[in-house]
Each structure stands twice: as structure tokens, then as C-alpha cells.
Image 1 (cartoon, rainbow, N blue to C red):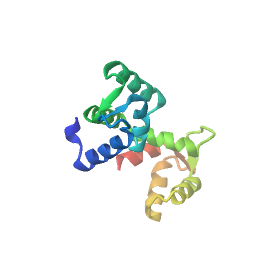
Image 2 (image 1 turned 90 degrees about the horizontal axis):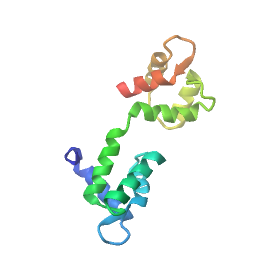
Image 3 (image 1 turned 90 degrees about the vertical axis):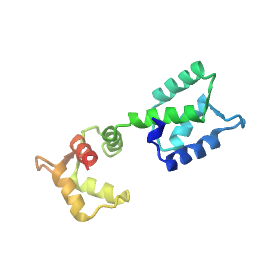
Image 4 (image 1 turned 120 degrees about the vertical axis):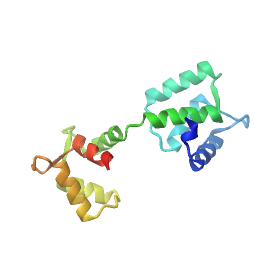
Length: 149
């Protein structure tokens, strides 16, 4: 799986690995794995971090070397579902848990968050996301549209 990585990715992984390599022995502790993954903008759940740490403790004596680190990262990168990540992000915009946002709130959120979309792109996204023309954009529909692009 590591053969799918670019030189730039491997270099970035090595840089983060080195930041967490405290003893100079070419390994990092299982307990640092979650922080190292987050430093690479991966967002493992606490449960998955605990599973990884437990595996590292059991199978690797509590430490992983760089090739094992890459293996763990690649496995967790491939587990990411962009649509699911968007739905998680949308929860911030939907504290009531309704599953939708009105078009003006979406437009405001996207422009406030610095999303680089033209007015036409925003209009198209809102139009596509508001399939029943009620002024509400369904998060599942919107996530599906955004990941299909």
C-alpha cells in the first residue's frame, strides 16, 4: 500500500514521525500515534486510536518504526469516507440535529469559512441541494453532491 504514496507524502510522514520520536531509537510509542495522526490531518476516532494502540502494545512491544507507522497511516487514510467526514462537519452547522440547513445559512457559512466559490457555484450548489425547492439543503444530499465533484 505504501507504494501508492507520493514522495511528498512520505516526506511529510517522516517529518511528523521525527517530531514524535523521543528516544532517538527510530520508533515512536503507541500512545503518541493518535497525536501523530492528527498532526497529519487524519481524524481518527478515539476508539480507532485505542484499537491501534492496543495492537501496537500487543504486536510491536508498544513502539512502531517508520515502515509500521506508514502502514498504519495508509490503512487509516483508506478508511476515510469523504462523504461521512462532510456529514460530521455539517453537524456543527446543525446543532438541533435536523439534517438540513437553509440556503442563506449555507451561503453565509461557506463564505465566512473562506470557501473559494463563485456566486454561480454557490447558487448551483444550493439549487442542487434544495431538490424540493423548500429553501432547505439536506446535508446528505449536499455531501453526496460535494463528494461527486
